[in-house]
Length: 62
Image 1 (cartoon, helix red, strand yellow):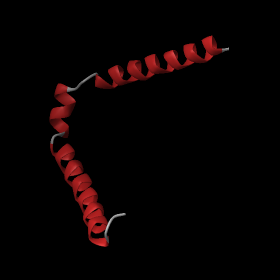
Image 2 (cartoon, helix red, strand yellow):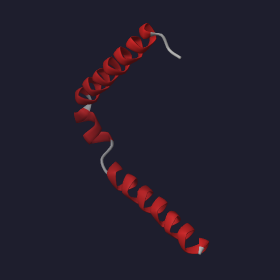
Image 3 (cartoon, helix red, strand yellow):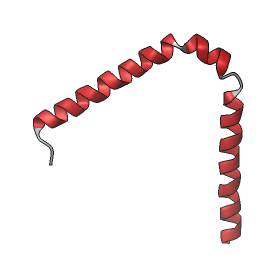
């Protein structure tokens, strides 16, 4: 399906991309703590909402 060169390129690209994303995130970590304070609560309530919808689906399916 893919040639060997394409697979090597894809693996290399993914590794480099992840490393660059880690580097950039670490560099901006101080700014993230200032500007995105409280964002974990939003994630928590979003996941809670999805969980409640899933439970409602299971209860109404029976």
